[in-house]
Image (cartoon, rainbow, N blue to C red; front, side, top):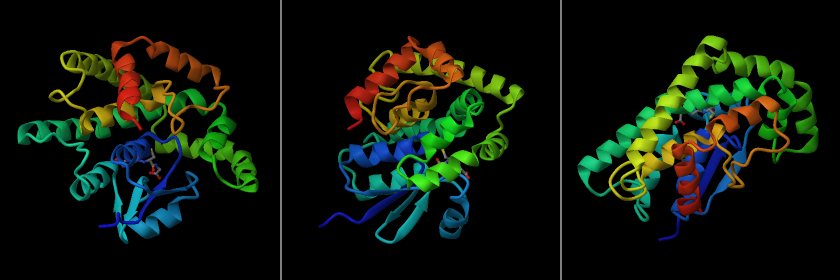
Length: 248
Ligand SMILES: N[C@@H](CCC(=O)N[C@@H](CS)C(=O)NCC(=O)O)C(=O)O
């Protein structure tokens, strides 16, 4: 049977979107990607899904949002290669870990990278407008000081919550290092959705060399310092190894 037509509606570089890009590439699924600009994306995404966030997947005319739900749909339709462990208990464990990382780790790493980059809003604007027409990129760049205010507010980038995010990231990194030490994976002895979710959601604070995630250079000095803080942590080395081994 021919593969369904698949379109990913996304922000480039975004870590929740990276979860879905990784799942699609892991399963070898041909797809198109439509890039949206954060901010101006709202009317179209809301009209399509009734909420504002991407990733959104259009598959065979069906529209799905939420990275976990999208991966679930892909897993049901295209079970090979699997992202869910075969064993029922291990699968439940992997899904519970994914849910935990989506709820806690994703927002925390995003808060840290925004805290470190929004002082240079043009950097953020140029990164997110990758792939758009030059005139759009120019306007987006001019508007970036205003967009930065909205992004700061929308993502809880204030000193108190940044400090809490730092604590959460530190304890999660220790958890990941400990959990992956025995087999190299978080659940059982094979790569699963739990590893994919953790590693993709660490993207903002790791220097991932993959073209979909490599941060444009030069980076703001505070972003360099943020990444430098975590280099050498065993969980960060593990994350880069997961990219090398399992991210097509
Ligand atoms: N729980 C959602 C989170 C998605 C999410 O936070 N997406 C961000 C980009 S990383 C977004 O679209 N933010 C813009 C907005 O919500 O308007 C998922 O797993 O897909």
